[in-house]
Length: 282
Ligand code: SF4
Image 1 (tube, helix red, strand yellow):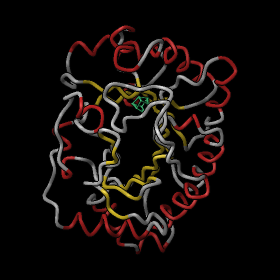
Image 2 (image 1 turned 180 degrees about the vertical axis):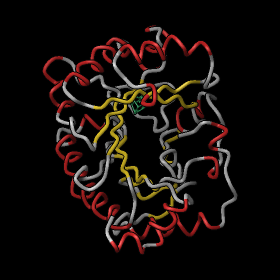
Image 3 (image 1 turned 120 degrees about the vertical axis):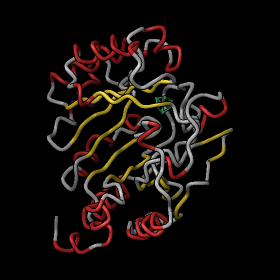
Image 4 (image 1 turned 30 degrees about the vertical axis):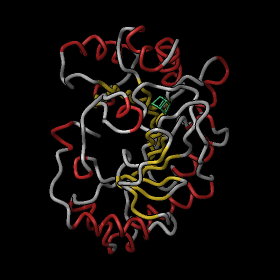
């Protein structure tokens, strides 16, 4: 961390635990899947609304300068963007990066696209919701289970750090999840790299009446950058009935990053403590 970052109010707030250290970037909104609980109503027909690589690199560099400690890349499906791995590799020269993916685009030789992310500062987070193929595929689409089960060990063999994220409508510590935990461990993923979180009732999940209701203060206040502006939390830039939710919009300006970062910091000062830890939202 540089001296500038240590003196920054952002760095101080992160050190004190009042501001989360991670900045999220929504690379794009389109996806090759159309999961039933998708927060952004993503599908192959969604408008792309993508961030340019130059914007992503500027966010990474300025996040480091301001004192943020980590980056997250999500969408839509980020790996639909051909330049994604190279851009993430460059971002990782500034801060550690986690990249979220459905891992369905790594079949055959395309695994090498994902394998470019074998780097000590990068982890790839893959969604898997059940140890039962039909249950998993009901929400996420045909053959999703088989594609994930094939991709995870192939990525690990190539030196990629893989995390698994399970989204559930049930209890987060339900014994029914034990076979899934065993399956994930058997794929070579460390127990600490298996996250279980609830469906949050926003986006398509809201239309389907799925998941837990959460107010702004219940959603982790991670600064989130999109092509439409900066939002409170990675659950902020959701889409419902084709329209972007603006209730958690911070600023339309995303760069310089100090503008949305300071807007978020200002809001945090007046917010009561949230219920995110109890709800398990992360
Ligand atoms: S939840 Fe993820 S994989 Fe599923 S449609 Fe949305 S962006 Fe795509």
